Image (cartoon, rainbow, N blue to C red):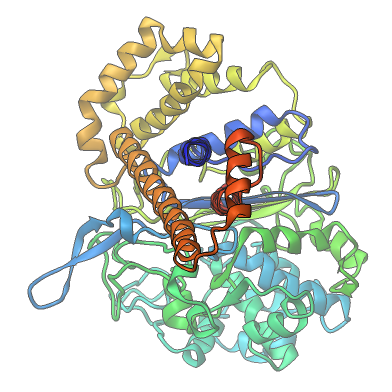
Length: 633
């Protein structure tokens, strides 16, 4: 019995030790292709830290040379719920932070609203396929597809000139956003009468309004980013294929590639809300600051955020509406590196790819709709200073970014739900993630390049980079920044950086010395003064005290389970021994065996073996569960 207890104690200690390890922040196993793994570890820490200071959740997927080398998930799909009045109506601008028990983690399979990345991975991909098949060319005039395009708002005959090339490269001359969904918007129809003469919340009517939308400048003279361009491109795909845009890309691109985490209108296509990252907290009201017919005021989750796409296009538009996981978008991006082919499925040819990636010589823009890093460095803000000229991709207003680097054979997809915060103010678009390093995109790309050994400069180590990030927030143009004059988002980003510094200082002398400088200690004290005010609308996922309490409870529950299993085995063995005694089977031979066992403690005992096996099984199950937990972080 003493031996049994001793083995139980040893196994219990092992399990409790494992449990304590499981409460430490889990990190992805970093692929060996990353020659400077410290930068990837720092990247993980930076993203995790921001999920405590405003950012709800994120995904990052990277392919290099055809191999998925990073596929990570961070944070939660949503952090907020709306507050309602006594009649059940949502009170604009008033929200409640979700309880911990109601938080759902982002996984590698969670799908995000891609916003304007829809333009690339639905509309442009569809258009590249159609061009490849000879059904249209970049020089095809829009009037050849839609003759009615010339019948409205064309007194100067400018619309006669517009080609597919012009609309894809945002040189057609349309306004950035006509706001077809808003009956009060009176800035795009060129008729000053206090109402929107292009108003529509019906897709069929919206097509007519797109045809009627006037130009504000002569085509092919200036670059101006416009959603109208890609709305028109989406209609062209539908006209040429005879299918709705969502059906066309599903049947001709996504399904042949077995991509099951990419769709329009996900709630109508087999997904539930817990599989989808949310976007804005108060619908499209900006915390009650905006209104129009049928405006949504609830947390948006599974419905496209873009107002025009939702109200005017029924969720399927050429400019917005697509949802996807980061890993499937990063995978899809490889077609641009593989002559248009993935896993034996030919989407389009190399000639088409080359023509769509060609520089438009206006802004950081490619001819075929892609954003492109120019030879003079435009586009660095999205792709980083280490991405070579010619790198393409796009961004999405909800907080998404994609990168396709032909020279280094890299594709990257970053998904965040950066708009899943209350409005910080004073502006309508001033969310608490306004200053985020993560959803500003470039830093994420930079750290991936550094990790791959493709980025060298004066920064010599991850520690140097972390210190540089903090210093750049504290000093601008040689002068010390007055944090009291900055907004909450700015201070929260610094808090996230300091939390990373704090977590790393004990294992690095340089960081420890920097952390303990008078400057940083004063900074920590200063940030403490405004912390309650800066964080009152958002949340820290887990306070240090809460984390310790969770660890304590986990250990307590584990100990109870082990003791329970041990007690069951002891009871079972005692019962078997009692049966033997009752049946009179404890003969002389049994006594001799027992005597032998007493003399030789190493003698095998069936009950002891069963107990050891049972406890070992528990240990193994917990170990496997912990490994899965680490993998899913």
